Amino acid sequence: MTLSPRSRTSAALAATAFLACATPLLGAASANAATAGGCQSVTVQYRIVDADGRPVGADWTSQGGFHQWDAAPGTVEVRLAPGQTVGDGCKYPVSLAEYTTEGSNWYTSGHQTLVDHATVYLTAADVADTDSGKHTWQKLTVKTPDCYGQIDLYGDDIIYDGKTEDGHGPAPYQPDNVVTPYHLIAAWNGGDKSCTPDQPDSPAPTPSESTPDTPSTPPTSQPPAQETTPPATPTTPSTETTPPTTPDIPPLESTPPTTPTPSPSDSTPPLAETGSSAPVGLIAGGAAVVIAVGAGAIYTTRRTRRS
Image 1 (cartoon, rainbow, N blue to C red):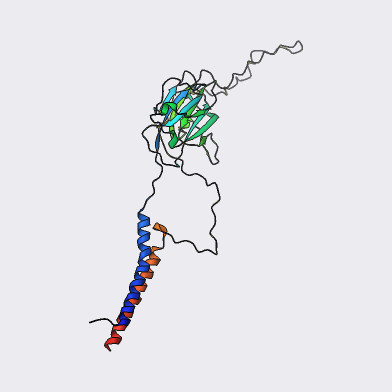
Image 2 (tube, one colour; image 1 turned 60 degrees about the vertical axis):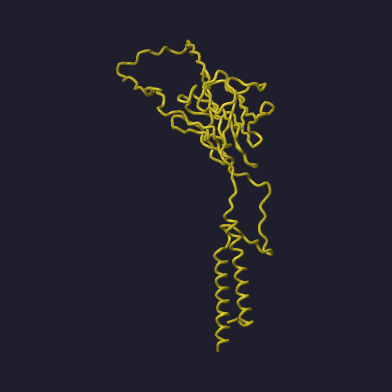
């Protein structure tokens, strides 16, 4: 049995409507399956250099931990370890911070006060390669401490000075186990004197001829003065270990836009969306309605022809 021309027309209309509604669904599914690669963590290498850029002590290393210095590391060169693939647009902040402390090592550091800070941003151009001998690496320089101090090399651009506004964080404080900076790569402690100068002894007053001598022994009827100064607490080092270090640092999370984001215009309809945010449910529902209408038209045509 063949369908009438009217039946063929209804069937063709239903098929066309189905394809029109199904095509956006297929496009949305394929767009949602595609994933974009992001920036991954990388390994940082560093070395201490002098004012002329010559290495001081060990050459490039990723060794972490707390180190004692013979000479304060005022300038540190940094780069990304060889053999890493860094995507275009990926940035990795590395900072150097100098603090004054109350002691020459982490266990006696006590209160720390930020003195100087520097930050650079490493990219794919900073990956070590076979031609690294001709490469100029980025440098971090802070003031050289002349008393007890700590210098931290770490993998973010937060300033850990105890302030609470954006871009700042808690200062390191060993007694309360505040182990900042985060993403610590390495640290140096040192110094041979206190950062607070001793107060000079005040000269003894010269007794005046008009001032009568005061008895050195209090009267027997006066009770002895009570001791008001509490006994000194023993300075036992904390049982906590030094803060953990790692040469692997995360990428910069986001870069603020250089131009403001334009707001959508009321007169221009928005573009169709793809991916997981597209209105797949509405499209699927519309397709189902069109298919049902087409099937109903074919059924009606067949009943009319039979009758």
